[in-house]
Amino acid sequence: MTNTFALLCFFMHLLAYANLLGYYETKMQIDELEFINCQNVLNAIERDLFEPSRAQIAKHVGLSRTAISLIANKLINAELIKELDKKTKGIGRPGTPLAIDDTSWHAIGATFYSGAWVFVIVNLLGNIFKTHHVSVFSTEQDVLTEKLIEGLEYMRSICPKKMLPGFGIGAPGLVDHVSGSVLRADDLGWKEILPLKTIVEQRTGLPVFIINRYRANGLAEIRYGNHKKFPNIIYIGIGTGIAGSIYLDNKLLNTTNYRIGHIVIDPHGPLCGCGQKGCLQAMASEGALLMFARSQLEKNPAFLSKTHGKTLTGKLIAKLALDGDPDARLCLEHISAPLAIGVSTLANVIAPNEIIIGGPIGDASTYLVDCVRKRVKEYLLDWQNEEIIISQGTQGKYGSAIGAATFMLEHKLELVMDGYCHD
Image 1 (cartoon, rainbow, N blue to C red):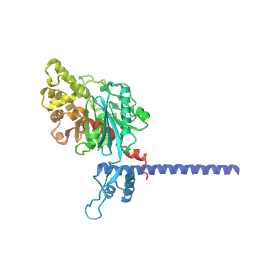
Image 2 (cartoon, rainbow, N blue to C red):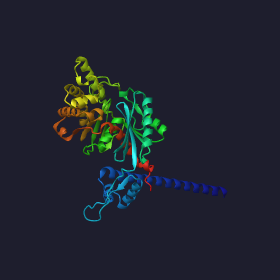
Image 3 (cartoon, helix red, strand yellow):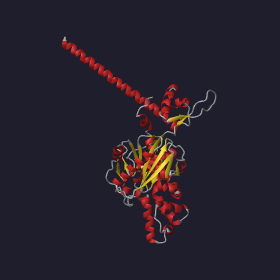
Image 4 (cartoon, rainbow, N blue to C red):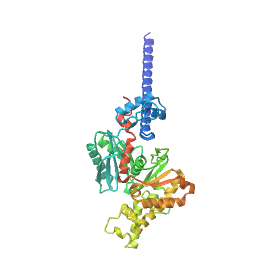
């Protein structure tokens, strides 16, 4: 009898435990579904629809008006969205438009750009509130990391109102999108892995979202640049290195498995820092541009005479080319040839609606983009040229930092609401 009773108690406890597990599993599934619905509503307001009413959102995401109203109230209470003045659209009661709340939360982004860490504080619409620069006279990993942390802590100390609890960082080199480590940065001579995400999180106590700096620039370009909202876009950032972003069906392909700067243009070309010969980066980056300019100066001391006595930079060459200097234009034409081959290759493989040429050199040089556009036209078929746009970057020196902050803003719902969408 005693054994039977003990066995019965054991099974009752087991059943209760199973029920408890089932309860928590069901609750987790409900929480996950609530979060997904909240994210879909937030995306509809931010990207898909212009100042939509609750009824328009309900139709767009396939939820009831009641469900949309409950979610909208949660997002309003979290100060992620706001109500605008009512507008009358057709017959019936006027709907209340909803929009992203740009008055409360702010995000901090940073990027390494032309020998300095560039920092920004932006609102939820990517508008800059504050900027900050920290020059770095070294390419050593430890030095760059320390300067980065100093700058992040300073920006945190001056951030207005509510700060999203995290940092977005546009890092140089090949970034592992899973670990947030910089695997290598050929243009800076980095061969050792830098666990940047781990270091910054340990030092600041906040989550860190790391993306390649040119991929970040591309994100800012797609979100805030004056471009048509095409679904398939490629961004190529040109600076000391070359990297880029691929957007398919409006989604960033964020992986280390593609490296635009290391498309081999000429297998017999110059040695790249990655160990390959003839990479796009080795043939068309700022380093390649300056190398060609200096080789011409050795042949002809009068070459680029307007740069004599000044520090020779890619931006200076771009400015002179814009002013009509024939030597500066020759330099840009030199790197436009491999760039055009790279662009044509991407156009044939991916068939994007638009290719944006940006970064420090692309943003600064209309002449370079014009040269690339002209050469690509010769490489592609007529119908391909009709279906692709080659445009110039617009974001300037803060674009990469804004993009880094925007990369973190992709996670604002989970940061603000701790991964849930509860009241």
